Image: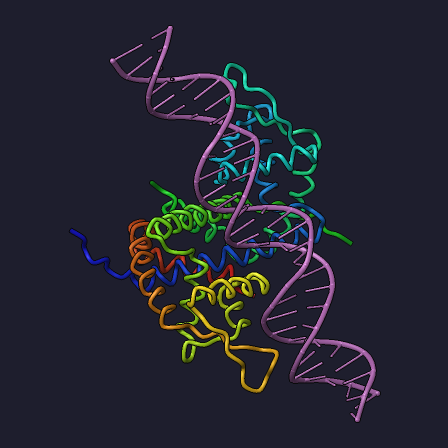
Length: 149
Length: 149
DNA sequence: CTGTTTTTAATGCAATTGCATTGAGATTGA
DNA sequence: TCAATCTCAATGCAATTGCATTAAAAACAG
């Protein structure tokens, strides 16, 4: 038996539409800043940052995947490209030959750092300037609810 | 002269991170529902919906672009694919041979309708279930601020 | 143990997206 | 008027993403 799905409320539909639009808009603006400064995309940054935070600058691909929500095959190839640029290196995972550890290089750390100065300025311009700290807190709380489960 | 960019506040950084993550999560969940029901992606839906809302089911590519925030060249090719599937048709724009009108077909309207039943159920499940109507209102207001300018 | 299932990462190939440019047609301004 | 500029949409080609599968190794079950 299948209940007829009730329509989502107008306020939920409006909120969802704006969430999509706001995300696209802000990501677009930030990506444009990064690109015009000659940097790679946010995806690269995300991986670099996660690695830098990880113990000794190392994480397994699975852990990165989970942290940044990329598909396994996309991450695999992104790591290829990053490795080719000397930003990360693959090293064996002790005790499990299926796995591997991805380690950020000094060059990778340096890039993350340089990107952050541009990224931070963009966040200031496109987010901090638009929301009070209190509103940012509200937003965090709402997003957390959406992610739940 | 260049001011040293001050760090974004911790609450803003947290909010931004969660916004990205929430958007990816929810879009991912919704796309999975659509796909498993045999439907095309949200991008197709977005275009169909905009067209259906437009006067006589017609909009120029520019208008669609503006509404859904796609790149010009991506929309151009998406419309190729949709036209090939018989969901839209291109018709001349009266009085300006550069432009064109994209018109949704009956088949396009039917698809939008069928997709909506799945989409609506997904919104209920992944958004309405997580936010009260009041929270949805807050979210709308916050997103509006982000989009501004 | 040994065969089966699960986990992890890579890859061939198709589809989509990004970038740069083009071509056609309007619009502008001297 | 007409050359220069701008707007609109398409397209060749490169890069990225998605899908399905594979290979290798580990975990598991009898």
